[in-house]
Length: 560
Image 1: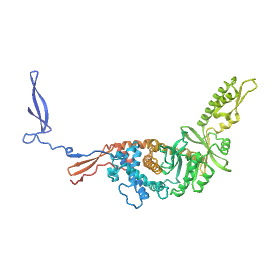
Image 2: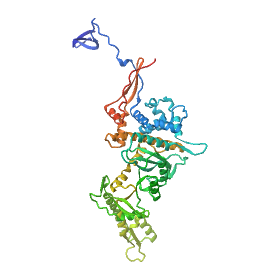
Image 3: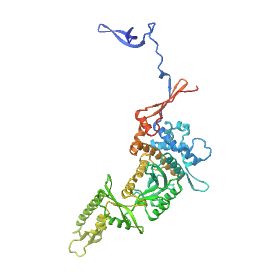
């Protein structure tokens, strides 16, 4: 072995080499680096690396859960739930407000883990944020929290449901922090069915849904603000309830709530004269679609003559250009001013679809002209061919034996009537607005459908697996609570110029999900590090309103 000295930058560095013989020649092979030469000619001893003194603990998921927890604190989740459900009572262990907030955050970020929630949460920063010992976050603790929100009173035998009062207080706090621009609150109301697995819960009833499948279900109705897509209230109904039968519940809730009367938008399935009068009596204005099944509506649409022009142009949509104008007609027994709008593309599409079907039916009927089947069999075959189009076709079976066996033709007057209703719709509004504003307000209510889609697709709200009515109401409340968190993320993105969309909010939460929290100990001192805090993460937390998050803490003394 030999020591080689190499001078660089005014310093001498030492390295150890060994001599080996290869092919009759002696060669020097590097063994190891010894370091810088000291005054005594010996290598200077290097201190051990700082990291070798660090005691590291496991990492915890911190980014997305921390942001959502801070949003929940800002919205007052814990304090409002605890105040309403517990009052001044002393609670042993974690409060229901904290537990349900944790559950709502889980529903936003990882709903598939809901059956193992107590396992999921211990790998996140949520126990530290909520100041709860991880071992206290058991399945029974979470289910008990649901029972604080909604429970069955053993004395009266009735369900005690605090969710309406919690909704109202949460909305008040949100509006105080995020006031509306000049004008009244415009809200959309709608109802959706949710698949149910339990068979003992009275809420789970057989009912029809958009897929026309009769199944056990519960129904969820939402009232959502147009301004910021924030939910104002939710309602849980039995599975056989339809949208019309829920309107009185809605009006009762509006009267009792702190929501200032504004304009409510709902679909044509909720309309009746009594409902409209009731809404106006409660101080609210209404914009709603009118069903074409009404003779009065059909008469107005038959007489409407919307001419596409720059004056009647309202908007361009994916389904075609829309034109609108106001007109007058008899509705509910009196002369009313209503808005009528037409979609040219849909108008042509509906006419083309009907004409194609009738053309095929005509050819199939022609094929029966020379048929010698018995009359009953022939009539049955005609019925199976015509199906739902019998109002547009007349048919006769010839019994004389002369001429074609089957005679038929189109009812031209009925075709003209149907054509006048293609792609044209009537809207009723108690708000004195121009036709284009009425139409735009009504067509833009599809945001409530997007809320339902998020609840079902992203939060896995269905199927409901609980069997007690109070638990069913409780878990639906948690899912709506989760959407409140998500709506804040979407709204703050919109304030930065982005469109309000789940996809954009999901992108931000995915970026935050990579941030981890790690505790490191230096002897008697401890420091908290946040890992994976990239520029994208910093930008995301700034957008959602918490730029100070994920900064390493100062070194703190730790008692040994």
